[in-house]
Structure formats: structure tokens, C-alpha cells
Length: 293
Image 1: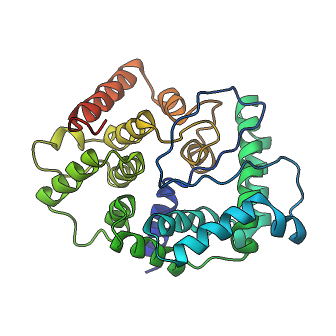
Image 2 (image 1 turned 180 degrees about the horizontal axis):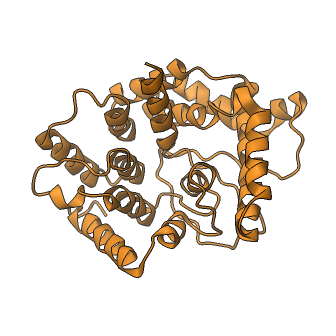
């Protein structure tokens, strides 16, 4: 049971999909802002060096954003329920272990192989601590509360949440025909968050068994990354400070000053792999029905 819970916790962290937070530290290179879909409500910018006092949290833009998001979720809005679940997801480990989390990342900063990695880690640590101090006033978050929100969002018709449920509830697994139908729905949705969620689901299982005509779009270890990069190219916020890039650094150690796609490409071991990734991304985008892209 403990092993299953640990796997699901990691899967939940892997599914922090689309509550994209606008945070632009000045030492990162400027980049072209990507469009966000209407379902994505970004948190306000986070100012560096602001103390995490109760008075600050009450009055902070981050706190106001969180309370507004929670109000919409409580009112039954499926997209807001998913976004709130993702906020809980990002802060579930941090809130009850702020000191331990901070020390762990600071150790990584001190031992970083490059100044670039140390700089990125420092900014992302500050970002995570300030965001999570505003989520439920920094109180511990229950796994069941996060899961319930995801389930409610999925039941309400939120496509990214429905895709996420394929990881949370892997039994019984989707049949090849069911997986193909889900993939077709994601392609037709014009929803970058759903595309990124599908990439996350594929990444958990090193691809997905899908019936034709979509088999080649879901097979192999590059499949998940290809769907994620395709989502970024479709307009998902994937800049240096976004949750996709942040997650690569804080959870996987891929800490680069660049977008999610740039970090992914730098991490791949060869030009051949990068070219293979490009081919797969282009195939996904070509598979979208006319008018979806």
C-alpha cells in the first residue's frame, strides 16, 4: 500500500499541468510570451525578497489569486477545480516540510555543477516557497483533497483532468481502442493543457498502447516529451519560469536558463534524438484536424 501511495504521489507531482504562474526574474533571458487558454488563470508575479509573514500572505496578490481560484472551484467550475488540484499538488510536499525542502534545494545549489544551474535553482526555490505560503496559508494539504478535486474536474468534463485520471486510476488500463479515442479527442480539443497532460500520462508508462491510426504518435520513450513540446508550441506557457520548466529543474535536475523545450532538447543525448523529437512533434501537430491548430 505504501509503495502504491508513493507511486501515486510521484504521479500526482508529474501532473502539475497547467496552473501556469507568471514569474519573471530579471536574470533569466527574455522570451516571447506564449498564449494561455482561457481555462488557465495564472497567479500574479511574485516579488523577490518579500518576507513570508502572515500579514504579507493575507494581503499578497498570490493569496488573493488563491482565494479567488478556490471560490470558483467551490462553485463547481471544473477547470478551476483542476487548477486548484494542481496548486495543492505543487505544495503537498512543501507545506508540511518547508525547512527540509528549502535545505534540500539549498544543498543542490551549493553542489551545482554550473553557475547556471545554481542560479535557476535559487529563483525556483524562492518561487515555490512564496507560492506555497499562499496556498492554504502554508498549511499541510491532504492527498485525498487533491484527488477529490481532480475527480470532480474530470466528472465535470474537464479534459486535462480526465486525461490525468488515466494515471491516477491505471486499473483497469485503457484498451487500445479507448486510448485511441482519448487521443483523438485531445487532438480535436485545441487544448494545450490536455496535450501536455497526455504527454505526462505517456511519460509515466513510456508510451501508451493505442490503436491505429494513432499508434506511432504514442509509442516509445520519446512519445511523452513529444506531446509536451507540442503543447508548448500550441501556446501553453512553457517559459523559463513556468511549471513545466520548473518541474524539470526541481524534480529532475534539468536546470537550464531556457524554455521547457530548450531544456528538453539540451537534455537529450544526441542530435539524432533531437531530430527524432522534432519529427514526432511535427507528426502530432499534423494529426490535428483542420481548424484545431
